[in-house]
Image 1 (tube, one colour):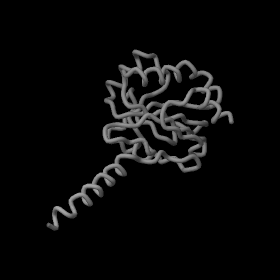
Image 2: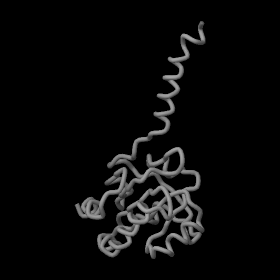
Image 3: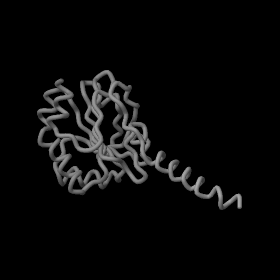
Image 4: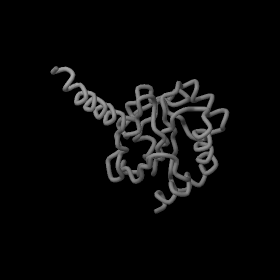
Amino acid sequence: MYGTINRPFFLTIGVVFIACAASQDLISPGASAPSFSLESDTGDTLSLEELHADGYLVIVFYPGNNTPVCTRQLCELRDSYEELLSHNAQVVGVNNDSREAHAEFRRENNYPFPLLRDTDNRVAHAYGTARRRGVRRSVVVIDGEGTVVYAWPGRPSVEEILGKITG
């Protein structure tokens, strides 16, 4: 009797726990950006501090290479890269694909910015973009002081990103 009476209660608690563990809040504007060092598609290790030293850093967390939405999103940033640079903004893409997959994806699409490898989703967890498998599509903008100035789940337009930088 004890096991059958409490089974629905424990099942409900389990479902709530799993739902809470699976969803994670995206880092908030005003927060200090968690530091990281990740391997790039070229094999170099790049750190947060290096990447935002001269101004803004636009971090694009994207689920996977060679997927239609991810490719379009990164191509839009590629096409606006010179304008972003003119506002002292660097761009990086982040997911957990292999270095080789990143290198091929970057070469095929002529991305002028590095693609970083977050193999264990440590950085995705720190920024609140981790999912059970990989990352949730999100964009985070960090200023030269290391403060998050913009964080958006999904795929904001380049114009919106530029608006937060030029603000």
